[in-house]
Length: 65
Image (tube, rainbow, N blue to C red; front, top):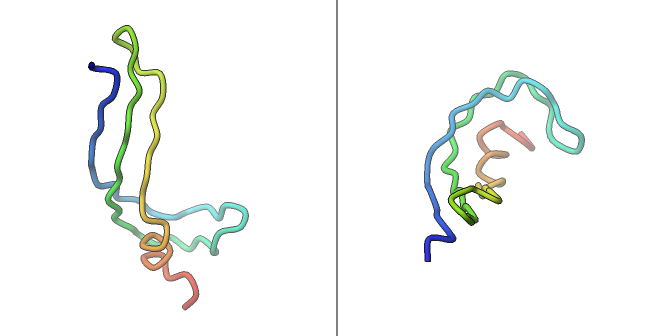
């Protein structure tokens, strides 16, 4: 019906600032696969929901090491 769409992409980043409840940021690089899901109405995007693998991100930034 054209009311939904999805995209898959990779994001490369550098973890520079510690967010509350997350491991300490120390300039760690990461490369994550992301899924984005869009809700569309009247030709406009109403909502975007992104999903990624948090455990993979934590592994990449060295959490718990």
